[in-house]
Image (cartoon, rainbow, N blue to C red; front, top):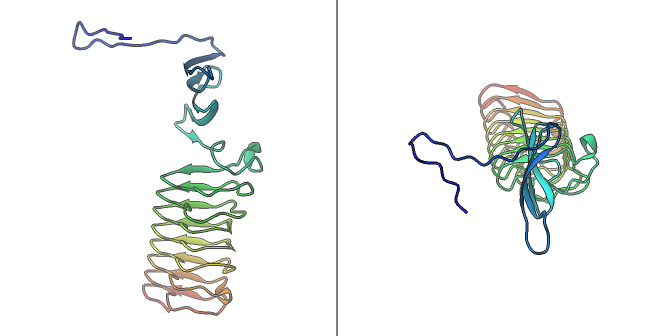
Length: 219
């Protein structure tokens, strides 16, 4: 059908669905087999909009402009508030999440999106291909294009900058690499606890616990 209101250039055509003050207004999409296959539903009591497909809520937008995706991944209900606790935003972000991976925030194209997860928990990953092939990590902050791309089992990492810690794999823990390509070739468990700040700092490090390097090309 057509709703038309265009007599004047400034006219507005509107469709109103009037619900109760604590009820719902719903635009529902049905087919011959299911009367709630899809919907746009607004909660007047909670002031949030849900987007439903396949009979289930896939996204929630509230009056703070947040998008809730905790019910749209494979993380189960072991995370925050009995959901997965995961928030993903970006093409292929968190594609291979699994039950047992909780409370992660991923933002960016393919952020932590290529590896098959195994107990990937409590991480923040931001940037195009940041943590792209990561499979297992805990309590890590990974920010920057291609930062921390290969992690398979490390924890308590802070990697900030394009390519920072891009070779780290398993059990290189508690390092702080800040700067483009900081610690980019480091991948030895004996390097745990190291700190590198600056462009390509600690890029030559192969072993040695608790190293500290500050400045471009340092060590």
